[in-house]
Image (cartoon, rainbow, N blue to C red):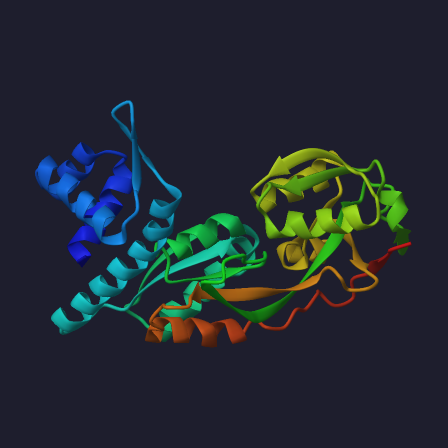
Length: 307
């Protein structure tokens, strides 16, 4: 089994056919078929099911695919490191959507000042999708707020964050200093999409207390959710980092959870087998700058009492 076998296997998995992989790699189809057969013989397992002249990857194939991506990436990194005399610093940085909105632009700006010729590719999506990209070696590192499930990923808490309940001036809660959790029953909410760490945390809170709210808006864009709060009289639970400008202008009123169970950490995440480049170490240093969580001074912050 060689790196060449793994590259052919990945191409077949990604294209869904022997002919597609052959075309992508500029190889003959018999060469591709032979490589897959040699892999299956080597591991004594079937990597693809062949049904009605179509290929379907098996569970064993999916397990190999994740590891193959890692092995090929490490080999390519080795080749690049040894062959290039002057390597251009680069970083493929992922983030969950909340962090991509409120934090990553400033982090990238700081990295570009610290490493002037760095090339950064950034992608923002929900935590689950970022986790998959890390496992498939499509990203070098990421910063997320949701829970990471895979034991193959290292998670380091780096930044404190807090979810708060927010409402606009037109909402009945705006002039309140205290509200009780049962008052959320039946209220209209704008929510993040499924797969969001923010939504998962708030839905667990509702479930634990037997509360039911009406989800009237669903969006993967924090600005869309804020607009629903400001213009459509919705409630929302979001990171307080996302609403600093609205708080300064007295357009929102926020409520902290009394037990601070909505407090959480943004986490730096990378694969356990990932070579930690100088760029990743620089990212860790930059994130330290944003560790503290400060709300605008002089703004009234209400309390959400859980009972």
